[in-house]
Length: 392
View 1: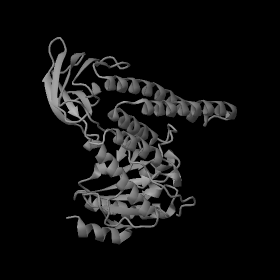
View 2: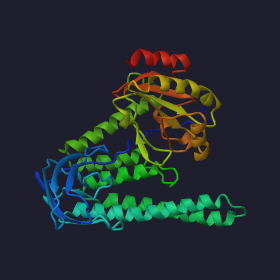
View 3: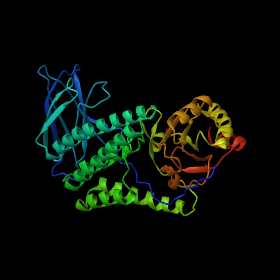
View 4: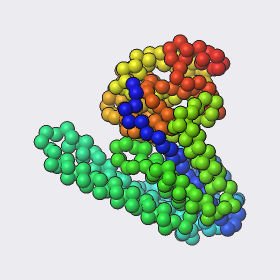
């Protein structure tokens, strides 16, 4: 199936976290925590472009809930406080000051923590709080619209509800722009940018992601303010290399023997999944759609290859160009596609189309454990033969 609306462009790398310069090396996080139901609290340093923070300190929580955590921080960064075996963090702070005081109550879902002594951390708390409120409202509007779409003679109500949601989406984007424009912390700026891009990958919310030019502008301006900061320089260099590579692909170049452009899309449960998270495995990135008959005919071959090599450091990542979630998930179930699947449900306007110069589907690329494209457009027995050759 061919793309009826091919367009050239660059996709902005989704940055989940970032860092900036700071005035000192020693960083202390202290405070009190209520309803912890744990003996130990951990301090994790968030690495650039990763959702896997590294533990840099831990401390026992006193009977009164007090704690003190310390680390040596050469550059400003995001730090996460987490309790033993707890998925959600207790707090997230920025080390723009040498000491940050945190007051937390795990039982208080609405306002779980407060900070003192760090302007950037306070700005981060404010952003997260206001962002959650607005996104919750947008989500509720999306649910309402979905419900109305199944009712008869509801066009006038749908029009009103749709206009309200559109206004809310615009207001949220303006809010994010305002935070970015006023931010005095590079860590905050990159966090806000990455957070917005991540939420924009959820098609149900209806957020429009930052364009490549907008993303580059934020990163370049932030990095220019801190020219000696290695973390920001790394982000900017990686982004520029990715954009140059994607430009070459969009112009008709092949990705063979080159790093595969990274992307983050939501899986069937709405959880963001990044291609880069599969590094360390051979990965077949399979571009398809439920409405694509040639794709559906090819799926049994992909299933056979997956079953044969799934225990040999190999997996498949399905990337759909679907528009309707129900059709997408039904096809996954009916075709017995048991690997991870992602989509932004934007049809040929999906972000991956220009990234991989996709002119028709089915289409796939095979990546080695380092994320390098080692084969393209493998079909049937050819796919099995290539996997037998490289997967040991």
